[in-house]
Length: 402
Ligand SMILES: *Cc1c(COP(=O)(O)O)cnc(C)c1O
Image (cartoon, rainbow, N blue to C red):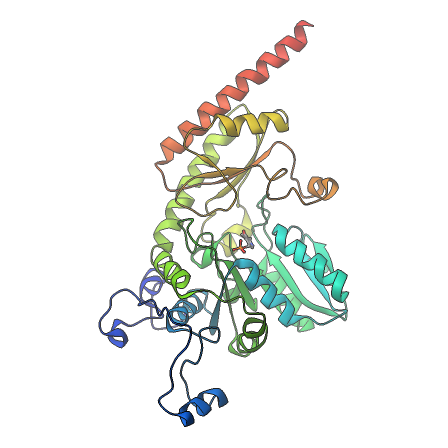
């Protein structure tokens, strides 16, 4: 974090904006404009030459968007930030900027579905290959690095099984080969995990999730070194053009102010839910970030839990249908508690065999713990679990009777 703020909570509120610059407006104004006027023709020329700072056209920069980019850069501890129309616009801008035809990308063992789709397309169109690795040891990482490896791309915790990768360890190996490490930090947010401070090079967010935090915006963010982000800004952002709108940027600026408060509450509630789920007889497995890697790189476990229940795919679907206020939906990080079934929803596109290898069974459910009273969340889950437990024991006893 930049030295100006001693604590994350203060930076989350103040970084990137000073009301003195904007006629005392406490909230960052929304600059709803496509273009910016020049005082003279010569000024326009200077701006285009890069000899004078200033705005030109909103695809190349906008004051509301800049405030957001400066805030996220401060929070992640990076030199510069860039904002995009979606998490996938951010992922594709970074991966296209880092690679050329016939390169190779080393990935974590499990990726967001559309990131997997993008890598498949890059392989088909540009012969950019990729390998997956659990990255448990330095040797395991080294063994898959090739002369043409252009970057290492990591998600941790891995969705939906919450396995962790030691970011500092991977960054040390990457330094030996001078390969950049890109981390999708969506599940943790910079409040819980800051990959750049651990030696990684680029951080990506689907800001749709915890950064926005209220389920009302789709957006993406990238943070890293100034040189690299300048090049992204002038190439894959400017020329592919997946930019954020000023209003979406404003929603994220608002969301970020409460990120620390929300993440603490999400984590606290998730911890309670993990205990309760582990003790329920209808639940066979609970996945939540813990152990030495968690302690080393994440200040808390976050708000995401996956759990396996007894029974079949139908039992999992029954459980979801029995819920009262917990919503059946993909996405995560919202105020509302959301539940989804990875095998038929977020990971339905993954071939069954790879799904099995990734631990995504038909009985696995993913819960994004919201900000409702935790007792209410548990009561809703418990009554649904009790119902499936009852129908499971009915089935078993009728089988025994036959
Ligand atoms: C949602 C998500 C994305 C994609 O972000 P969008 O904002 O939906 O484009 C990428 N990575 C992770 C881990 C996600 O959860």
